[in-house]
Length: 371
View 1 (tube, rainbow, N blue to C red):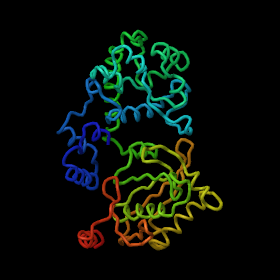
View 2 (spheres, one colour; view 1 turned 30 degrees about the horizontal axis):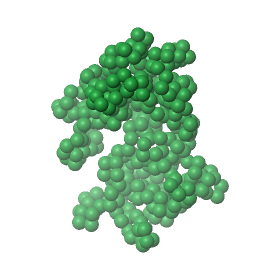
View 3 (cartoon, rainbow, N blue to C red; view 1 turned 45 degrees about the vertical axis):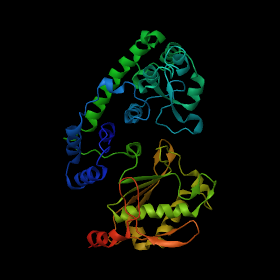
View 4 (cartoon, rainbow, N blue to C red; view 1 turned 180 degrees about the vertical axis):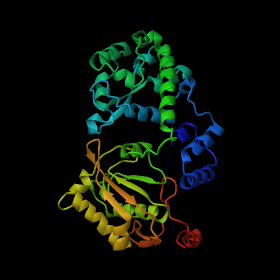
């Protein structure tokens, strides 16, 4: 996944490459080596230090950095809280400048100098902090801030690949700091990825946290809630239709996993609002409600044999995981438009979405898939 992102595997010829890669995953006994070899044919897999130069937080390298820091159990520099934990809005994760931008701007790294401005915004000048820590840090000089961090949490800097040489923390050595951290990150991320793709001995099952961190794909979908509308603060029955649509799309394809209580941005928010929208407010009632919906939409036979529903804790927050098996019959889902008019539609999982299959393709697909 991360190689495909940082090497922009799908930046061109998306349908062809995606179909080819999915076919490899389905048909090969050990697809990962083959997929990485395909990526290597287009671009070198090894990350070099100069790839970080001028790169901002929208680049896939930043996502890889955050995942790597979490895998090392890195902590917030001010609070000591593990950045993998979900601790509520006050402790949401943010990415702050190590050398404060306001200080850098006043020393020649503002927007009037494009190259130096990019250095100021570079991901190597970023650390993952909680929101409350970010507010506390404010515009504190890097040398003073990092010195305090090292005293309070001695190993925390290494966990986020911060150079230990305090001489580099001085403003006059800002660019040397970036150069040193680029090298650290390149070396550690390469080691990390090398270990991930070592599949020669045994297959290692991805745990739930890793699955969430990898994001949505053709086999995984996130939903913040089952029926509680976060925008209006009320129950929205049309959201239940979206849950059914996703279940059907997975079933009509090759199966998949629906995870509720997780946002599109991979934030683990839990199920509390959904629980409170039900009479007794329990996970048992939540599961019963889901099964009643699927019983009514697709029949008891499908609901009882093709859905595995569980409520695991991820970083002390309860979420709902529905594992959906592919079914031997096509599932049609009744959907309401904005006027409340209901129509039956056939949905199919494709990439990280569940589009309606066009009528022109429906008969052919059903004949092939459910023959």
